[in-house]
Length: 404
Image (cartoon, rainbow, N blue to C red; front, side, top):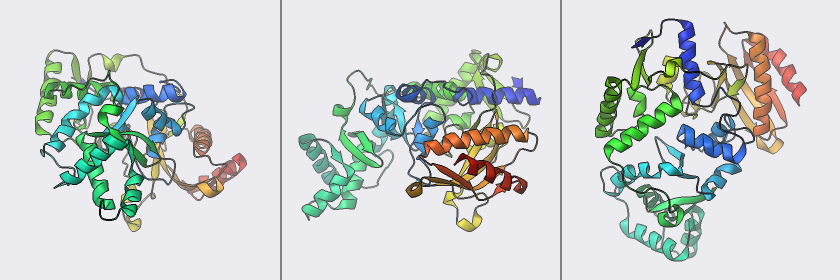
């Protein structure tokens, strides 16, 4: 077992994690649409979220990794059948080649081993399925239109629940989406013919999870491997395969000085890693690199909570604070909002929390990052209400005003 005792070793471990996420390189997956496909294939999923204070999280995640990415490209990837939508630990875009690994959860819902909705309306589900089979794809908004025109046939809320149940059971897939208006169609009409649809056994599923996590995170914990998965048999199989890998020395363990243990491929710690640069990244709260908050705190010493789910009186940093990554450290957070009507990005508060970094380099990198970020938000001006340390507020306000 490798023991991490020195700061330089911890820095190397962090670089392994960030490099595996594609956050150290400027274009690790390429550019534009092709780069976005490569990015999802590598990191395994991109979480979909509805919060719209700034550009949606699923677009933000790809923006951080893929130069020239545009939000319209997510729907294009659906239309091109490069990705599909389903549930990981949350609603997500997933590589189409990983389709078969969604089948166990669909099977469990369909057979009542787990529930999406309790007591689903089978009659209504069959009516919806028959309608889609005969009339073609159905948009979620179409149900409402049909309901209002044909009173007494479908009621909006039960019909919407039935449609979602069919999707979660795997009878339907989302063939395209405009914002959050989804179009549903029969799975056999959406899924490309070459895609493997064989149900994986528990060992195949566990192997897939381990392989994907090692590829996309570089180092993993047993708890993190089955994040938000409550299947006891799956957890036991994952643990067994990890122990087998350790015994065969294809895997090794690494221990941090706080006694937390991570697992990585043998030799990964000595592997050549991308060089550091002075780039700062503004990260989504739903980014794959930060979604496991305990891992983030253990590995990066960054205590982060998304506070939009808290009452306003209990928020310390703001409604939708975004982590700030500089080199291999999370150095602060920013609460901001896009005012789309007047193309303005309002930074409500900016917190720079690391005292041992070169402040001028961090600020310079932040100015570069916020310029790109505002462009991504389609904003032409930026303002700052307050910064911490407070002495930076006026200086940054002048810098940002000059950008507009």
